[in-house]
Amino acid sequence: MSELRNILTDSVNGLFGDRVTRELLTRFDETGDDGGIWAEVEAQGLTRPLVSEENGGVGGEWRDAHVLLTAGGFHSAPIPLGETILASWLAEKAGLEVPESAATIIDGSDGSLTVAGEGGSATLSGAAVRVPWASKAETALVVAMHDAGPMVGLVRLSDARDITASQNMAREPRDDVHFDGAPVRVAHLPNDLPADVILQFGAMVRAAQIAGAMDKVLTQTVQYANERTQFGKPLGKFQAIQQEMSRMAGEAAASGVIAEAPFAALDAGQNPEWQIAAAKARASEAAGVGASVGHQTHGAIGFTYEHSLHFATRRLWSWRSEFGGARFWARKLGTRAVERGVGNFWPDIVGG
Image (cartoon, one colour):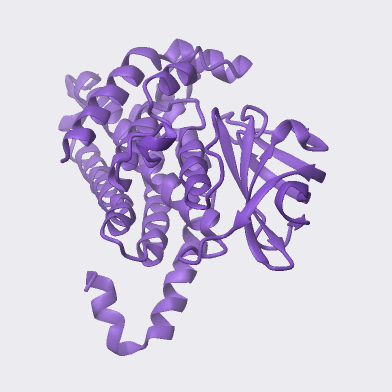
């Protein structure tokens, strides 16, 4: 692990471990207040791991960002960390100004968002549904369609025609946004990126967050099973419980390994599309198992709001379907395997 990664690991886990408490998460659920966590994350420079030092970032690698995202998932941090990291990276890569504060990402590459004009006179129109953190962010990084092809744009969300607030199961904002000629700063999508870059990289972010939340549920479940006694011995001593926790541990390990793979591919200068599809499909599948085993082991207490287990499991249930669920990405994997032919099937499976 690089020196920077060690520093980021200590910083983010120290901050979230101290500040993201059950009380804070309860307050967030009730009021949407993050308790000042976002301001502290910004102050420590944790929102720009991929941005160059010239633009106020730390000039890190993708695996540095992976550390932050996994920690955010483990601690259920109620902030748009992943979205802002992606928006900042893509804005700089496209030659746009890096967002100064909380940002979100919107995929309009399917034609749902269109850009008219160029340069300083460009405008954005269209609608986007279930946009993460739109009601909390100041800026959105969008990929929208233009007569000249896909464009990357930065738009202030205060310029949207309207934002209809909604939430996912974890009570994180997932809002519908409508633009009607909103001013937007645009640039051509870099040639080395696909038009669905937000879908792909958003899925990569969610896979890393799922892996972190899986570790949290596993940690809580093992602790509870070792502390809770039944018939005179800890739950963890019963073979049936041990089998289920072993299954859960395997799912957590598998999702953790595959979730890091696309970040490592990017650091190696490789196209991460294959690894992203595998990561999101596998992590989304693991999320269901992890939440199920966690709640079954905890029993009735785990289903109460007063217990903290639900903060992680509600995020697992929410994140597994965002930016494409297991079936969506499994279909992508299957299509790619068929297109590449039987001779490439085994090398693709083992990563050759």
